[in-house]
Length: 309
Ligand SMILES: Nc1nc2c(ncn2[C@@H]2O[C@H](COP(=O)(O)OP(=O)(O)OP(=O)(O)O)[C@@H](O)[C@H]2O)c(=O)[nH]1
Image 1: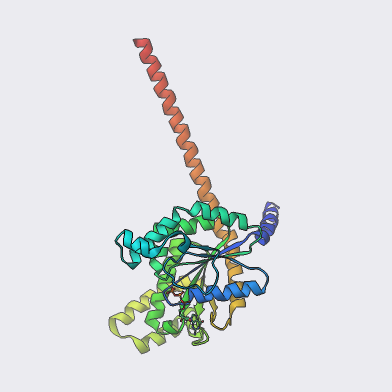
Image 2: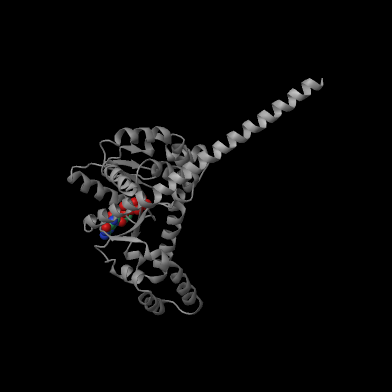
């Protein structure tokens, strides 16, 4: 009975809550083009998204961003001022932007009642976002407010080699581990090469082994064999969609997977987040009680001292 009540309330909440989509991917994988495609797709469906650009180094955006990191920080100026190279400049710009994140989240909050999707484009230098403190602060803040899905964009034609494929999947796995958020892989550029080979390699270990045998020999072969066995568990729970940001093929399927990932947010991520918040509160309560106990003890000791004097 309690279960039903929870499901009913979360059902209506799920319908009304917006969804954050964080686009992550290696340079040139097609994040920005996919953002543009999704933007156009959602406009067609009369649910225009709210777009946030977190890439300070992008020179031209093919769409209008509602919030643009470049309006807050000038990446080239940051490089000059702090005497940094391009990657240091991007990281510092992201850090400076993160200091204003509260204001950004307030704007997002105001928009949440009338917006179904918030889209976040991230820097092509993937590690700057996924492994930096500011990247973690941004993803955690975003995910703490509304259902959030990470879309990992893969350049399919460039991943057709088994060794490259596996490296890319290990990277995807590490991002999942780092963000712990509902996650899906969007195999992009399927107008050039279909992602069928990837699906077959993920579903059938022997198929991947066969492809591997054709390419690698000796030590590399056995190392990659072992690593692909490790990835088997990752593949078993992985959501995958094949898309072409260029032609728009597969975007409906991508949104079906995003929907499934939102379900996962409610079923797994949010209860975990709530447990963490409750645990933190409990720790704070215990610390306060402990502090109070010590204060009372100190007081009684001082009172005792006064009496002694
Ligand atoms: N054929 C084809 N080309 C694509 C597709 N998506 C993107 N491209 C091309 O791939 C190149 C890189 O696309 P971007 O969208 O700039 O990639 P990005 O990941 O945002 O790149 P960074 O900003 O460097 O991180 C461009 O030349 C795009 O035109 C696609 O679905 N099919």
